[in-house]
Image (cartoon, rainbow, N blue to C red):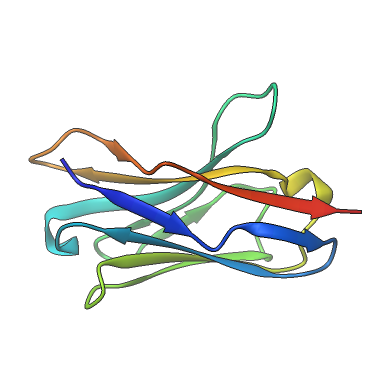
Length: 116
């Protein structure tokens, strides 16, 4: 299993920016896909952005053009740069790691709150 530790959440005004980080306990060379998901109160967890080992990225339509996912293989860390934040981006953000030799692993989550 992979241990994931998220950081970077907080309270920000609408239009502001935050950068989330997710540090993995093992090398990215054993991880096929890293992703960011979010869950707002009363709603299902949804995919926000994913990045593969080949640096192919995918974004939810609601965040395209505002969020950017990236990875630093040397630090075993994936980032989510969030710009032009909206109140509807308020949620707990979770990091996910998917590989071939371990079950899908989730981080503990980090709260992002965007005030209007």
